[in-house]
Image (cartoon, rainbow, N blue to C red; front, side, top):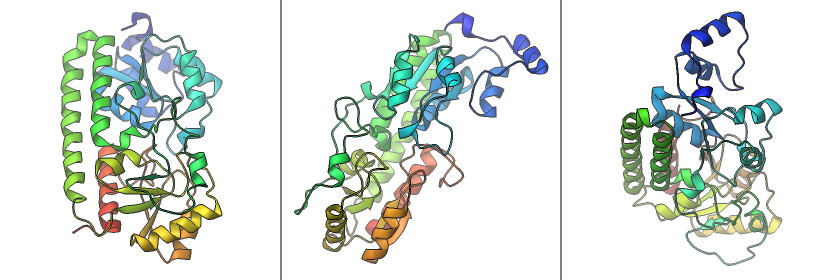
Length: 325
């Protein structure tokens, strides 16, 4: 732990009284964290990293999140104050490839302990479809598939696979132990608890999606490739990995054909990106719509208060859409 970055309780309390402290651009809960004593200063790039930091770090860390609730993380541009504050972190948790502006700022931050989740599990390349191939014109959204990928073209959405997310959790736990060895036992215990919860979530998905009327689901953008592969499903994305990419007319026509062929009942949209195209395709095809949350942020529209709860809601939505028995 970098001793100069730790803020003694008495000093911080006095500074708050004088109204001189503006330590972060994050929520009031983060400010409350800092008032409680000497903690490891952890900066998370966006929600999936924040969740790990808080669950594994517990009372021993003060977490700042660069991506505020409700902000689409792919297009985040950091304010100068946020960029400057990165250098005050003891540990930065990120997932390179999903936020280009953040990646650049982190590389220039000078912080010694940077944990890239993309190095903690095996990444794969996913396009607009995962699970099986369909005939027809496969252009359109596929040309956008790598726009929001890691530098080597891999799909960065690893947190939507509970198994891969558990591997990342273990790596984050090890990093916090290294940065703050005095509290290593607590980090290890918290990591084990979280990994157990993620294992239970994986079991729930396996059982819940084992027997369904169809294996195909249509969603706004190709965020669910790892989830689809893990549980034997076929993701058909309107856009590529970039949630703001516009599909071609050929891709829309192809999706309408797939919906009929595979008995798709539902077109999924998400909470942080536009739902216009998804709802238009659903209306034109006589399909229902529902939310499948890529968990890039938690807002008051989220179907749950944290990662575990929202993933459980995703499972319920998939079971309904796929006709689980």
